[in-house]
Image (cartoon, rainbow, N blue to C red):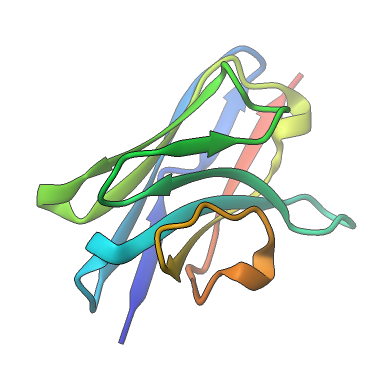
Length: 124
């Protein structure tokens, strides 16, 4: 059973930083791709970033390029999302997701497993 557990959310001022973690268990993830999504109140869940677990290829939404970095610690089976220069529009619940296969995709339907989410609030 795949489990994804996010942590690291919180309240931060505009311009601040947070690092989200996603602890993955229940599989060998070398043939998986991992993604981060976010959902603000009243809006659809949107793609933030994705990473190929084995090859390290990454892809980002335009809105976060240059500010957010997705990475993996293989020894800890953990995916991170480093978020810098945060803006109020980054406020959302952030979700970690995993998909079988190495292709990086941006649609929610492309992912097989989801975490429970962690709240990020950026105050102006």
